[in-house]
Image 1 (cartoon, rainbow, N blue to C red):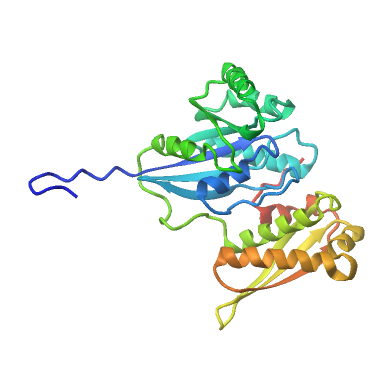
Image 2: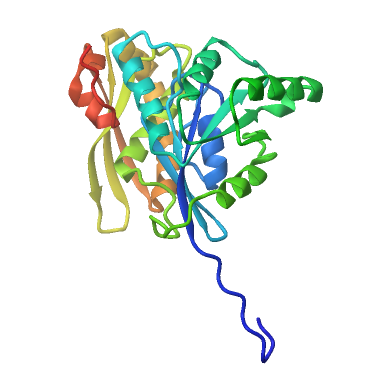
Length: 309
């Protein structure tokens, strides 16, 4: 508060911008997005390519609003779904004010990282390097890796973090806030994501599905929220369908005596209730839909463009 006769300091001008988080599969993009926002907006599992579409998380830092775009991992695509995800990831860099490249410091530079670095040179946005999982690497190796990567690409800044523990995340967020362009905020102060609740609920169930069965269940599975009904007692009834490609996969999801689907549902219900802030009645169904990976409707449901070839 200003003393009598003193002029109050002017409020800082608002800033707002987009930060695209890109990197190879399992570099830690979703974990970092959640840490930067301060709550779960992206699902995290050990399965590569868990993130399939763009997930936007919204955070504030002082006068700045930052919109973080968590993208699918970038790798050499082999299937139609792969191509859609990689195209979506690169598309996010065109509209971003800052592109943050995450590198798993423990595994250093792999083929996927090499391919990203070659294409990153054509991206005009400000670029920063984020070395993740630094708690698993000796400092001399980190410094050597940082120098090698900066010799290959013109990064505006380099950060060393552990997205899982939060080490270094505050410094990264502060720097990004300071380098956002001036302009009004795009979202209300209390909004943390632009994803519809139906989509977030489906993603949470897919996370629990993968965590429970990631060694047994193939990559080709998806979850869709089919019904969402607000009840008079303040709770919500949600019906979701898990789609797999073969009957054998459906049996895996159900488990012996329905044990697997019950455990998946219980875990998902807890997290969905926390996300929506109200009690949840969750009903899960498992259906076989052969070739869903070539169905344009499924891509639209996931927020992806359908590759024609």
